[in-house]
Amino acid sequence: MQPEPGTSPIIAAYAFAIATALEQEGVPAAPLFERCGLPLPSTTDPMVRLSNQQVSRLFAESVEATGDPCFGLTVAEALHPGNLHALGYALMASTSLRDFCERLRNYYRVVSQNAVISVEEPPGEFLLVTEVAGPDICLETQDAFIALMLRFMRFIKSPAFNPIRIEFKRPDPGEQS
Figure 1 (spheres, rainbow, N blue to C red):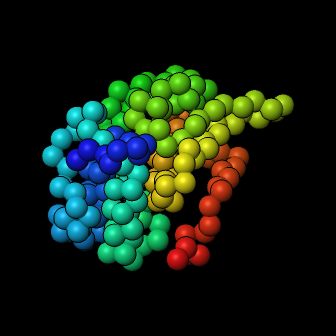
Figure 2 (cartoon, rainbow, N blue to C red):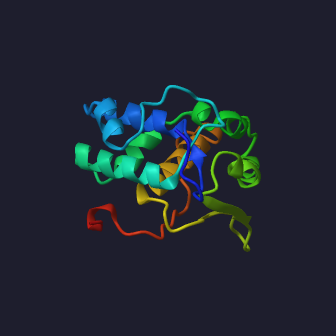
Figure 3 (cartoon, one colour):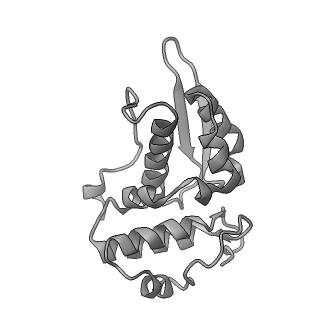
């Protein structure tokens, strides 16, 4: 399950969460993975990677099979720190939201090259900024990432934690074609 040459790889353990989310939605994962030319995940080896094109195809098939344009959010619920290996556990060990954001900024590239993450501190604000690092990253991946980070932040801070705002640079899921 190696990426095609010249692509930005993402840790293949992500596929475990996609398979889990499909099964939770009542969609058998094996045939869908087969249609995408991918075996069901059989390893959590952090060196095994998927290409963005493979993930995008897997998500497109998943959205079609489930009928859920917000399937990326379902995948976020199926993700856990272990899917991100050492980064996931380091994030969970953060002692504050600032520590979490700084660890994410410093080490995200270990699991994916799909985004550039920065921390900005304009007067009276603390911003975690995620910029998509290429045109071939599907919207479901963006949704899953944001929802997962919010879930992790709530674990560290409080289940009632809500950021003041979350801004997206993407169309509404109901408007996608």
